[in-house]
Image (cartoon, rainbow, N blue to C red):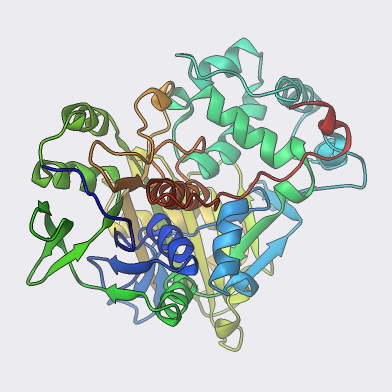
Length: 471
């Protein structure tokens, strides 16, 4: 295969998740001719919604959050004019069985002390728990540990964390952020999450929740791309990618079409990349990339969607402690189009716990009803109108220790082919922010190859207060 000898004017982006949308939007904004190919009928990837056949309701496949530290995802939402579809919150409510609440929120104290009053007042933690949490977080103030073979469970033991601190702080935070069991979690990325959310600045830890269904949210990207002349091919599966010597371009084969392009960005999950790799031409580094991709593994998420005939809670969201269900999202309050309806729609999320994935639909609904009643006794009197269960077995990649050693960069073994996806080398874990960063990095690599290097990656939020003294 000869190397391309023409400048890059056109690009095919394969994959319409956050990574593909970020790459497509950045390049379309810069004047490139973009074609986005997505095998599903909608964009957003794993952050999507659909009409559930059993309920007739539009539901998200799972709740997705972002925080103030997600500078690239926020930039993407601004680019596609969807930023105003986010609801921002300055506090997190934790509820214990029995209904007692604790509130974590920022104060006017300078970082990293801004979160301290909330922790000190929290009923959910004993004094020993608070001292342990403070000791643990304090170790991240000066920087993030290197990524060694140590897992976070071992780190917790080494830093003498109490059971209360583990079960009521470290697990809820890291299960939600990293979606992995702590004995399989990288200390480096656990530290990164905690430093960003609780130490760097009050702004970095602010939480945002989409106020519309996820497919509607990412649907703004389609409108934005079309307005910039991009071509969108939905319900289109790529079967093969070859180099066409006569055209001096890459040929992307689908059923039934064939598209030519100067460059390609693969913005697909690692398992999809593994399927497409054998179709690509031989090149130095192809086998090494295949070996890297084969070493990734998945972690699951489950969600239970419940519709009641009355209000169960006035809270918009909450962390539920000491139960299998971990987070509650009140969609009747979070999504404005539901506010006029009499019934209340709650989404309950269970991150990472692999033991719930084999459970049958009714088992999970019964579990959710029993556990929800521990916090809100009115559940026992309410009528459950309908319910749905969603399971994402391939929700995220497992962020195990030293995974960065096998995460590939945006550069591929082939000229003018680039890689994106949250699993690539972004310096972030398996998050929508990581996906957006990967899309921007791939777009940057493409422009550099085209001889017109541009910068799309957004800088991290600056540290404030005393945290400015540390890197």
